[in-house]
Length: 375
Image (cartoon, rainbow, N blue to C red; front, side, top):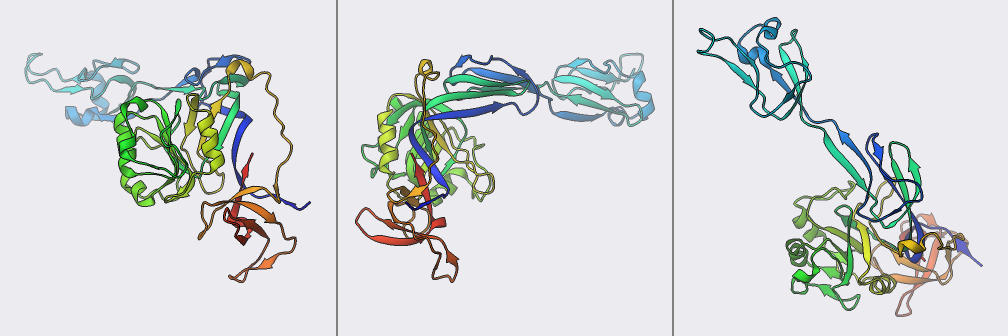
């Protein structure tokens, strides 16, 4: 039987998922191997050094740099409050016409230089905490850095997303994968939930979702112009996921109004009411990162779950998604896998795949123009 390998999105009801949760620099791991964790549990923590502020004491006092030590009332290592005096001149008769140098921040004095007349002030350390993100079991502890959390459950990858990691209960806001998620469909009962739309979410609906406090939106398509308006800038080809917009968006099919794949919609409907973790982080260049929806199984079942990990590729009958116009976003079935390369209209000689659409039309496409929907 003909078979080929091609990049694909994973859309699967049950699979083993490993999530590496690491600190940006060395710190303390708060959990042990084999420990059961919830999505909101802290698994590691550290502190980033606070911001540095340069204060020219000599300039502010009007003295030479090598004279500042005589005027200091604080020393290296001392803590500071805002407007606390660091240095002062004696003034007239010890109290008149004094000049003060006050701290512009709360923090500590890291260094005082009599060569430059400057002090280095540092703001308090910035706490950094890493959560488990998904309900699961700590499979591995990475000393001083973090952990690997293992879970089993539904795993859906999207095409594009914005916003970071959020958790919430799945709520079906649309009845069919063709439905457009309108502003009128959003209500306060959806606060803190991850809502699922059909073919499109309007700009007005997304803004209403932010106002209501919806945690995330999973939908088939989103208008590119609406995205620019919502973000306030062109997204370009940069990695997403760091946006602070009050919501996370996962687009499963592409830009524009595109019916959500039946399999994706069906899986989300099946897990309605269950706790999910989603992340809109996307990178389309080297080191591809895809937005994701994870719905873990019950934590107590994770140790016993067994999943078939046999190799998968593209066969006759495999579901694939077309990722180039004019059929962008359509989910079709592979009907034939020609062995010999074919010269396409551009003049390039490429490997191709013949697919059959829902209405029975057969189309010959370069294999690079489709991606597998992995099950």
